[in-house]
Image (cartoon, rainbow, N blue to C red; front, side):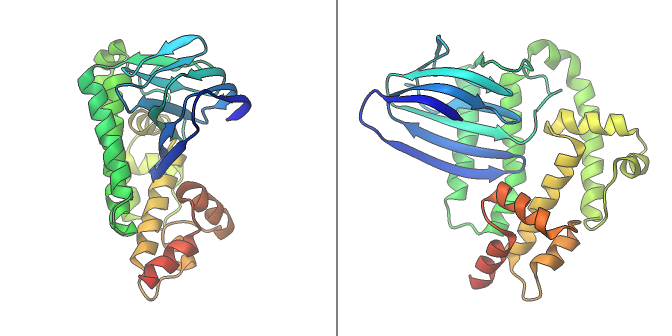
Length: 286
């Protein structure tokens, strides 16, 4: 976020908790009363969830109540006024989350009204994910539950953000997509070291490249390449976190299909906030 103006409207305080799920960065923020002006980059796609019944803000002249979830894509000019302390969760997806049935217009804030039950479910999943990341659970255990946490979060968001007409017309197609992606994931899991090319995968699964790409986009909101890369990153992290005596970063990387270690280190740190060697060192020291 590029801020041009930041004015405090009360005593300053700021708190943030962050955790990573496959394909998403989850942040819980507590802010003091303030006014912001500038440019906000939503990256691929950003969802903002009020985490308090008292959350209140005015975004670009529009009142944002505690019963509305915000959805942003691309860049947006913002004028934000928060007259009281706020608590909200920010979910930044690494992909654009298109073809999922969510609002797809770019360059503006889309506010989606939520029922009390819908909002409570999303908030519950977010708090659960953040609470797990703060426990004594080791990294290999968290890696095992991270994907199921993401799936639970996506299901809760879909129930809230999917446009009703798309929900009715797309349910059967979505089930077909889900079955195809399950076959893809099973094949990828059983061939962790194999380079996974679109044409070869489509042939192996008996479908077209286009259908396979559409299925992954519909189910996970990511490209085929992003989805497979994320799965292999989490598999690598789980292997490093086990810290077996013979494990090295290079051996684990090659076993999970990564051949360029420099590129992997950059991607790994961007995703998990640390280098692969740091994960391995901590697990062997434990």
